[in-house]
Length: 529
Image (cartoon, rainbow, N blue to C red; front, top):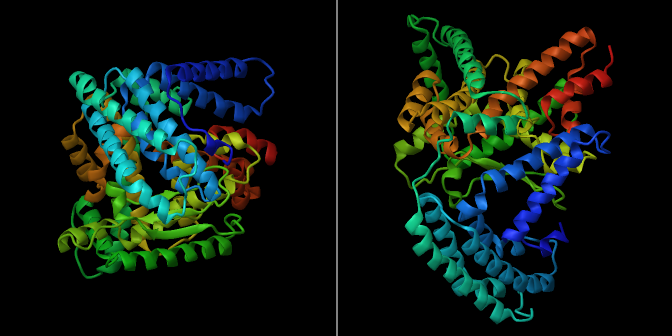
């Protein structure tokens, strides 16, 4: 990380062409017989190189995305201040280099950009405006606060050139680009969807097949939800008559689940901190997996400055090779200044049974634990280029593993929350296909998600933006979870009484985020039968 921070992205046409040739040469080398590389690492490298060639040659994002440049321009200086492994004088000298990088990025944008969408243009201009204001009004104050001196050579002239280049890019954007801007073309169409799905999954899976699989899963899980809901209602209300329809019974149980909700952000944070401790204890007592020795986890409430992301929360993991690899779980939050009913509805979506299940997914042995252990792998390629379906698939899969082992045993509502999440995962895949291949609009997605897939309104509302922006990633929850479940059942059948769950879990995490079908060979070699 230390040497790389003294360089910054270059989006000039010459550099992009050089990068394309580099990736195409990588692909040629990987397809040669007897290539001297671990076969799994080679596969990951091939997938990544193919994605890079697709990004820069087929999709040509450098010609149609202002944000590709504005994002780098806006992050050029903040990334220096965040680099706590640098000395103060190193940061001071690096400032001048970043001013030059900003100038070069702005020049490249003017030279490369041909036509952008209205939405991309609007956000890109906002990035540029904020950066310009920061450089003019707040940079000096930040330098004083952080005791960074303006000691680098040509500080003033480099800063002036950076500002002028941003202004020139703004002018080019508001004239030439704005005149040719077009409406968002966010719908891929079936042919393009299938092409990208093939690249993403490194398989021959098609949109038609995944939609069929996801719809079957939706129907299967709804039946399971009806069974567990009947069990819950019968035990909780022994003197009441059950409704005739399964859907009414499910809604009854879900309503009770949503009533068991946090009161506010403070209550939610305390609840999660206790949940994390309980999950660690459970994994240890049940001997499910080997826990990491040193915990590097911080749990906090998502800052309101995160915008829409604050409503759903996220896990912020340190990048590969970070010398201080802290992971931060940013819990969903809502301002207490909003109307009371809106807050109540929000917390109902993030109810306590849901969190008792999702702590498995997010922390132990899900995302946090898996990422922490994968840092210890001797394969840097797996850290840099993780296989997408593995990441969400593993976290999804671990929910069922712990529930089957007795986590929250007897709590029907926690199991119901898991089934609802499983239903949501299948719904993500299904609606992703329907929007991009069959022309569904936002209203159709909302209706299907809430009425057929029984999503909480909080999650259904946020789905449309993700379908537009991350259609492939949305399939990873269901696909990955299903592939890991199939792998587990195969191993249990193959080994019979010799099957060891802890060995299974440890092997998957230690191998790192690789294509899931590679584990069949790994396990066969690890546990010959």
